[in-house]
Length: 82
Image (cartoon, rainbow, N blue to C red; front, side, top):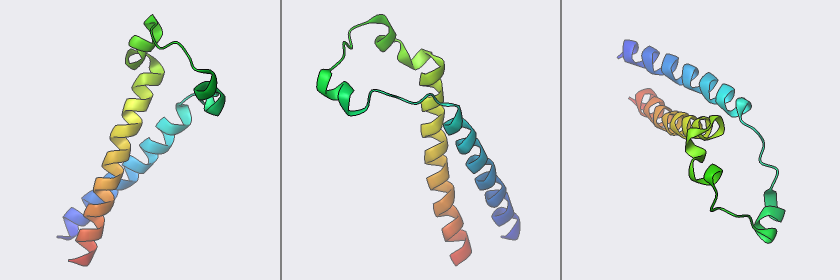
């Protein structure tokens, strides 16, 4: 059981570092509340293909690493209770 604990801890630390790096690489959205009040056209080529851009890929990886972070945190909690 100790080996599993160490493997999960190593995965957790790597996930934390990856999440920090991917989050820091993202561009800041400057629209904020003014973008929702004024509105923007979402019927253009960029909006339709946004997931293929660098920002779209970074957001996807942020979500994946965030979900892995939560799963590994729960797994570590369960492992330490046992």
